[in-house]
Length: 111
Image 1 (cartoon, rainbow, N blue to C red):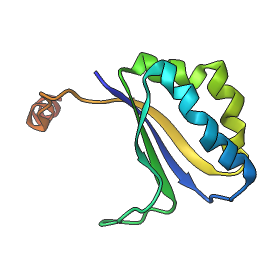
Image 2: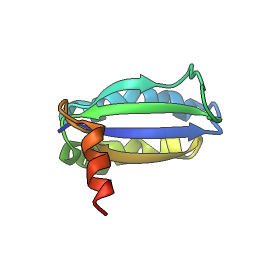
Image 3: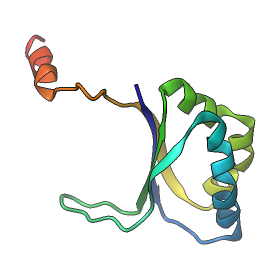
C-alpha cells in the first residue's frame, strides 16, 4: 500500500538554507524510493482558504516513509527547512486501487 509524506507549509521565509535543503533532499529520498508528487505552488483554492503551499511525497509503504523521516541523512538537513518555514508534516497510508468509499460509509453506519 503506498504511503505519503504530506506537508502544509506556511510563512515561508526565503533563506540560503532552504536552497541547500532543496539541493539535498532528493538524495535522502532515493534510498527509500520516495518521489515528489506535489512540490509547492501554485495552488487553486476552490473551497475555504489555504495559506501557504503543499508538498506530497510518495513512498512504497508506511515503513519506508517512517524510515526516511527518521534517517540520519534526512535528520541532518531537517533544520534547514524548519528554521525558516512553519508548517505541519504528516505521514499517512494511502488507499489501494480497489478502495470504494461506499464500503467506508457502510462500516460507519454499523456504529
